[in-house]
Image 1: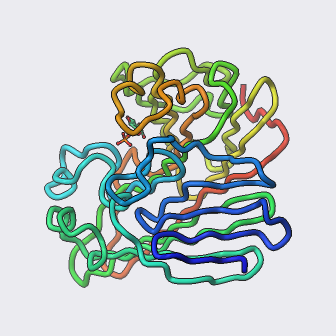
Image 2: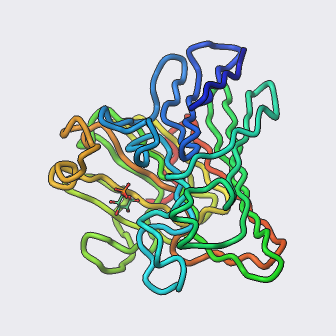
Image 3: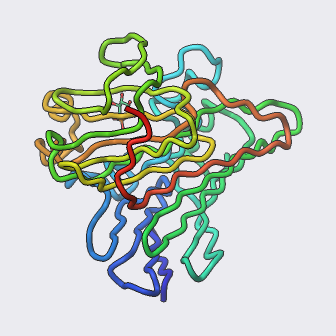
Length: 296
Ligand code: BG6
């Protein structure tokens, strides 16, 4: 069977290789493991809660309808950091294709975390489609405004924790020239460095990165992850380093920051706004590619 469902999670296994699989928790519709021919591609904290008691620390948590904390919008500002999708149990909608194995999950206000839905009482429908290729993982989102009268304002982001060998040997490429908001310095500037390197906590929101820019994670000169984006113009790069990791109870081991980097494609610099009846779609594609410096 290429798709197996339990009460709490769904596993897709590729028909050509049983060591290529993806595991998705119904809580948050969070991908928490993606193995490619036996090699884990995503970082997961050993203290991550997989029991629905808090969002998963690792894998691919889904950020909706707000990235970080919103301070301006009457309703979004009431939600906790990163919204309500990652702390709601999604409905498994079933398999939509046999090869590559593809499944869907759904969320709407009737299913979402009731405490948070009270704070953000909007009508919406989310459909997440997860496709496991023999050499890729595609996560596709459709957001629809199901209200007959109110606009729907939101952010979307795939909060992808990529597994790496050593952060000090890791570079992230093809973000050069993009304007960014540096959450550490709390200021905006244009990144003129040829690549992003990591020597301390780094938390940057790159804005309006051209869609044809492939974001590559490079380990000692070799590209180990390539991230392609559709309709996700902003890219967050994050590594918590020593002090921030210490402060996160569910971040273990404490030196685990050395083996992870978050590259998070999203639409977070501004809010998207859908009129009643409208839908919006976007995807993230994780795969392997040749080294491709598109800009230096
Ligand atoms: C990143 C943010 O996307 O998520 C960081 O840029 C934040 O500022 C990080 O610390 C983790 O957030 P959380 O809510 O999962 O601890």
